[in-house]
Length: 80
Picture 1 (cartoon, rainbow, N blue to C red):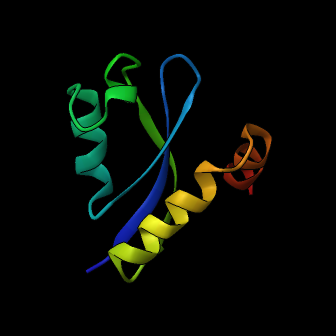
Picture 2 (picture 1 turned 90 degrees about the vertical axis):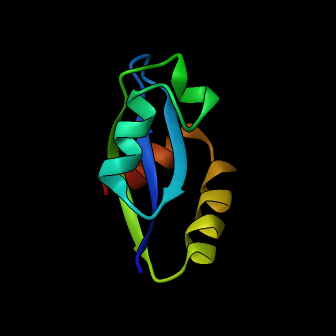
């Protein structure tokens, strides 16, 4: 099974980082107002970046790593 680390861009321009096993389903869940309190009030969201991993643990570790970064560094990653 594949797992993904992702960035979603919210309607207010903020970025949300998360992980999932299904990118399309996760975007749908966020846009239904479910899944994360952060995105519930910032809909609609669009997943704009993702990285694929073999295990859930790897995707979670990447999320933890990237959440510590400043916005500038996150945006640089997305652009690359």
